[in-house]
Image 1 (cartoon, each protein chain N blue to C red):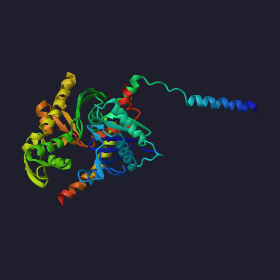
Image 2 (image 1 turned 90 degrees about the vertical axis):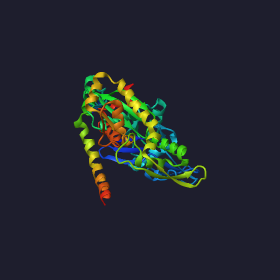
Image 3 (image 1 turned 60 degrees about the vertical axis):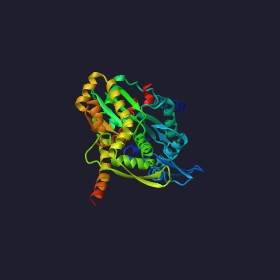
Amino acid sequence: MARDLAIDLGTANTLVYMKGKGIVLNEPSVIALNRQTGEVLATGREAWQMIGRTPGYIVAVRPLRGGAITDFEITERMIRLLLQRVGVSRFTRPKVVICVPSAITEVERRAVTDAARRAGAADAQLIEQPMAAAIGADLPIDEPVGNMVIDIGGGTSETAVISLGGIVALEAVRVGSFDIDAAIQAYVRREHGIAIGERTAEEVKVAIGSAEATEDESQAEVRGRDLMTGLPKTVILTPEEIRFAIDDVVSSITSSVVRCLSKAPPELAQDFLVRGMFLVGGGGLLRGLAQRIQRETQVPVKMSNMPLEAVVMGAGHCIEHYDALKRMFMGARR
Amino acid sequence: MIWWIVGAVVVVAIALAFFFRRPRSDTGLESFRRHIDALSPEARREVIDRVNRQSRPRNSRSDERDDS
């Protein structure tokens, strides 16, 4: 009998929680294909290492962008391969709970559940990522108090107010850490005249990127291709210019947090001032982001203990208590 | 003999009817209470502890790499 699964199908990474066992898979949401035959050559970490380094006949793609499926068939194949890796076969068809952005449309919802069922799931239910994150971050969402969670992922950023096991207010934008990487690429191209890949942009972000000035900042040396000559070229990037480059993206994120705060009922809003807001997701690890959100909202911001695993842990808990928590699934509330 | 067969059929029919009976519908209060109880810190402890235990060996391995 297949063990039921919870899947955090993120733009950046896919995590799978197996009932009774814990997190059994944590891989980038990337798949590498033979462009000519359509054959899958690699998935996960192996495919991620190929991004930007493939010969002409191989393409390494991320089938999810902005939290949405951009290629249904490739997503289905990726999910199928991931399920096979955790032991699912045509004879073992588990129930699956999938975490999706709350701003997902009805069409996208159907695409995700169809992809999961065709990939081998007996049944597929969806749960909003902020709700799953709040469960996984161990917030007291079972109590009549305001809990605020900010989930910044690769393709989406969502802020939710949760109380008594349900979402009270929600604000989502299709902007995330990949947009920060793209902003760095665009800035380097525009100001320094060199082209860098998305992995290099991500490395720059991790090395010197920040939402606010921090202590012990240093510069970074970046190698790319000169747009004029086509030759390799090295430039020096400073933390100040990277902050400038990503400011629009960071502002979109902080603005959505402010909008969510303005939607919260006053009784719950006073809870945040005391308890603070909780930051989850890989995008929340950007240096200085918590401080910037705190400065712009005047509300304390705390980082979850396990920011990258909070969402799948929350969904995993829903799998462990499937019958009791059925009303949290997206189709169940209609 | 035939009465034994009829009796057995009746017993099986009653057993099947009992087995497939429509379940008593949950009241909203009971369903909500189960929902809230399933979200309590105690109920979530198992999953959180399980994942924390999994991440601890990974963290200590990366710490050893940093130290070396």
